[in-house]
Image (cartoon, protein in one colour):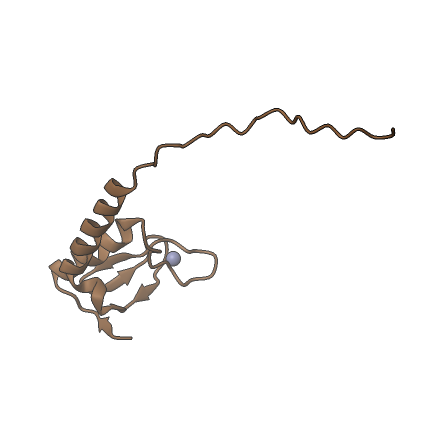
Length: 104
Ligand SMILES: [Zn+2]
């Protein structure tokens, strides 16, 4: 899988942080034991807001701003089309008339 290494230009940092805020995909998180904070993209790489963890790579599609734009559009359309079907509630409570005459 292709990786992009820091440093990143402002537009790439912006795209990376857009992924972090996106909510539909799992964000990059801190690798320090017991921390697990969502990382923040900077020109020099990912940094953790709570400790000094640094990560200097991202997936190449993540630094491409057009990719998340398209993804957002696609998700937006999906949301709009996700209307609930009319509930076809059919009544199946017919009385059971088949009586079994036991004995004779
Ligand atoms: Zn951390």
